[in-house]
Length: 350
Ligand SMILES: *Cc1c(COP(=O)(O)O)cnc(C)c1O
Image (cartoon, rainbow, N blue to C red):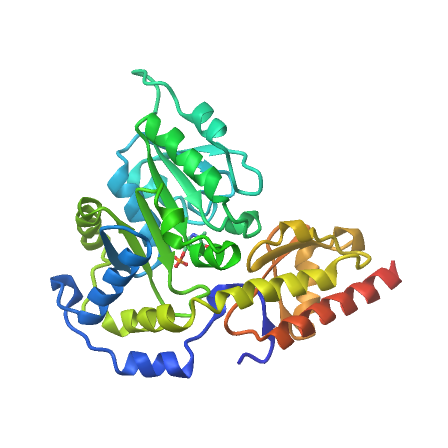
């Protein structure tokens, strides 16, 4: 355990002793040649979980997004995405740099948009219009507060996209957190999507990796890009073993992360100086506003570090807290008490 309570991100999880044991025992081979049994098992397992024909293990979630975009789109195409989407805000402009693709942004409701908004954003076919090619969905919507896409909305968006010949891609970095929050199976969320991936290195607690799933043809094309981008590995079973272990042992417990975040946020409700909306806390992410105390989120965050809690300043006025495998319920509650205590002192000084 770190010597502070780290609610900065669920990427901060480190492999447990049991996961390290599974890694040590991993059967390995050359994954590029399809000869790594652990990678092959992981791919088959995720394909089944997501209800797709095939899947491919990749070094990161970002590469899952990049490769999906590269397979689906051609230069000059447009991707319809929420303005908060990770592919838009937090991937170093990869869609433009690598695929020559442009985003068409939708102002969704906390990261979730409607079929009507998609229909309005799809451009008619015209010689001088960019070709609308893909609709990108993020489950859960990370920078919008961990919002869970309702299944009916997702299905309707899928229909609106397909009707006009667009493909649907799901960034499922936290898809399994959505499953834990809603009880809807992962395969139901992924059914309206042509491609979908899950991250292993967030709440699942693995050191590295993501797994991208889709049709057999899509995954064959994805392999081409995996090689081109340098993501084809060798004895990657060392990493895949962690993924297999996580799918056995760390999926059910994501519900605890969601519950812990709710308990954290509940403690902040009604605290003078802090603004948090419980209705917006749907999974393992919560934003809270500290501007009423007359200091920036960054300054508040720094003061928290001094008291043994790390929560990042995601925006000028708002901090973003995440729960995960590496923080116990007791620690989450303790962190909330520290936030409340600090707010009490700051409000008293006002
Ligand atoms: C973390 C994250 C990614 C990128 O995943 P990495 O494994 O860190 O590359 C993509 N999308 C969302 C929504 C994320 O939260």
